[in-house]
Amino acid sequence: MLFLFVLIETRAVFGILGGHGISIRKAPYQANYGDICGAVLVHQKWALTSAHCGTDATFIRVGSKYRLRGPKIIIKKHLIHPKYKEEHTFDYDIQLLLFRSLHFSEFVRSIEISNESFGSKVYVSGWGYGFEKGDYNDILQQVELPIIPIRECQKVNNLWYNHTLTSRMFCAGGEGVDACQGDSGGGAVSSGRLVGLSSFGFGCGRRIPGVYTNVTETRVRKWIKEHTGV
Image (cartoon, rainbow, N blue to C red; front, top):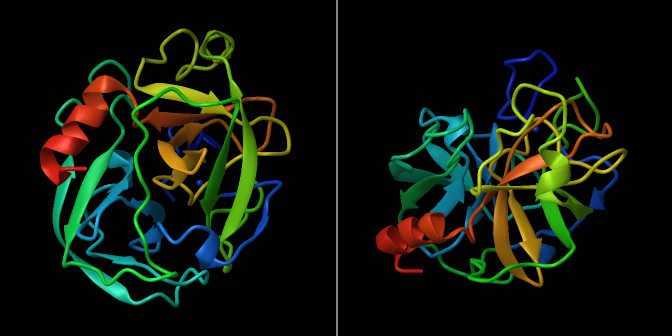
């Protein structure tokens, strides 16, 4: 997720606050994108990550709770949403990654994408910073975050909030519980299904919610299905 330590600094280079270490069995869909961002397996050949994480990374890592121990899977193609940045710097902040077919197991498995509205909380995982201006976690972390009503989130007095958030976004987290730098592209999960991707925020664990790309939004969901079939 993108966090603004300086106004234009992104979460792409974002972390988990207030969470705990977990086994990869608890989130076998979790992948590491180029050792800089998170990613989410949604098919044997496809993963999702944030568009702002860029297209320079050539691999993902899968199947390990350790950030740098999973085997490297070479990416064959990057597909950034064609409407990325349409109405906001982080509008449609999503890209698809294509790679060879993976062998699924208890350590490597895709997650279903939700087609419906979701509840009052999400679970977010990643290897990002454990505190502002910190460093990556070696072991995968997960935290439960409350959903913050979008009308409340729009009122945050910051350039990238302040009544500029779009329907492709939702907000979660707050003081002491949040994603942070290095977590961008990681999944937000509700009732066992994927509902969002870590996108951006202001600092880590402040009284300002993080913002997530809403993968259940009709146009986002349609784009994913057109390319992946899921």
